[in-house]
Length: 210
Image: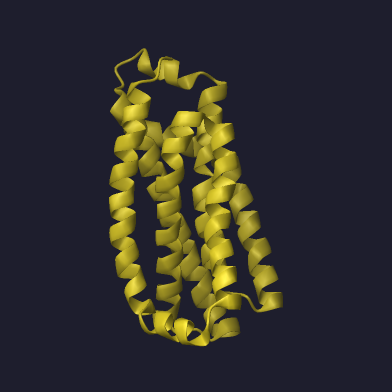
């Protein structure tokens, strides 16, 4: 399992450099615009999108056919991809907490509980996004799955924009009063979503002929 994850991490080395450049870029933009809270969501989105590059690499190099000619089992290959996604989201969590804590002192005046709330919601939504998109990538392939990912990312963004602009004040006040329970609900949704997603992806992968 570990060599499979390391293989993908080595492949993403150049992407990690790009991520660092993007983080610095977004931090500068957020400092200039005062939108420091968006850093958490940006990092979560990056953690959802970058694993797709490993699927593209595997498809281009016929890696699955090569891997399955050895002692590797299909469930190990699928499980390694899911662990990679969890690892990248863990990186997003760490960098997000560090970045938002620093900007919280100098820019947004956010308290630590508020930062933890924003970061946890962003990461858990990112995990849900991964759980939704991974079975489609296994079914449709990396390129078509990438197009579907855009829709997966845009739907919640549009919902938030529509809610913030058109939701009645009474509804927003009601939702705000229960906002502290949202991370707990998302934990159960993300955990259940990951289990179901893994089982679906494994079933799809088991039926593929390489």
